[in-house]
Amino acid sequence: MRLNKIINNVVAALMLAVFSSGMAFPAMAQGKAPKMTKQERVCLRNGNKLYEKKRFAESEVEYRKALQANPSSEKAQFNLATALMRQGSVTSQENDDKNPMKQAEGILTNLAKGAQDKQLRGKACYDLGNIAYGRQQYDQAVEFYKHALRCNPDDEHARQNLRLAQLKKQQQDKNKDKNQDKNQDNKDQNKDQNKDQNKDQNKDQNKDQDKDKQNQDKQNQDKQNQDKQNQNQNQNQDQKQQQQQSGMSQQNAEQVLKAMQDRERATQQRINAQQAQQQRHERMRTNKKW
Image (tube, rainbow, N blue to C red; front, side):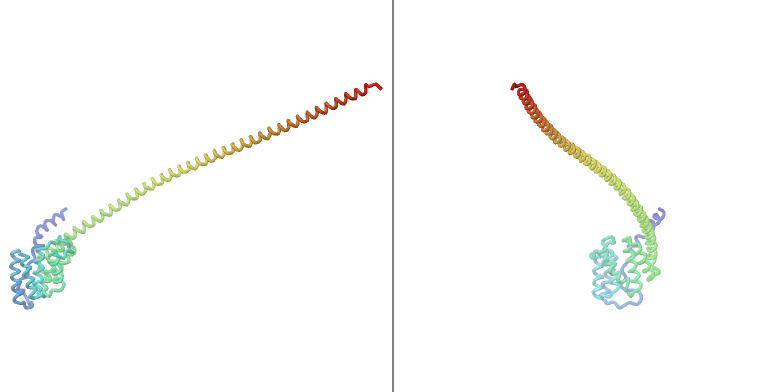
């Protein structure tokens, strides 16, 4: 909390320096410089006057006229980039080629890499640091401010902005670590929840499987009982049929036996009748007188 308060106080004191310290280079630069044409010099002076009045779009036109007079003019390029920065926004889409800030960034990048004027090269790095800072790309801002100080060691604005960007980077890294830890905790928590959920699902699934197995076993047992009952019924039917067939055979046998007995009785009666008749004849013959 104390670090955040310090940072906010520093931001309030230096924010104006971060985004408003850039200025157009004067038409006449110190030290040795390539000779300027008259038209280039006039357009640069006109552009600077318009820039000081915050008429940035009009100053842009003058700087482009200066570049038409001398396309290799590093001062005209830098002043054009400065005017474009005032018309653009660091929060716009980085890949928007129509964004003036995007155009300014391209010009400044070329100057930071290959400008012959070391002081101008440092200013280009400083402005690139401001753009990166506005996008909350504090690691890039730190590097740009360091390059600016290498070119212009006495640039107090670059030094102050470097300290501010370093503090912001520390805070950003700290928040990033916290977010990573939080994400890891959430990931672990989700992992545990998923594990418990899978465990519960497996438990329910096993329970359902056991229930299905019990139902299947019951169905199988019922089927076996039904098959056994059907088998017993079939056996009873077979026994009943066998008994019926056996009963019919026994009845027939009794009828045959009875018929045989009746025939034997009739035969015996005929024999007895014949013997009785024969005995009567013999008695009659014996009793006959000669």
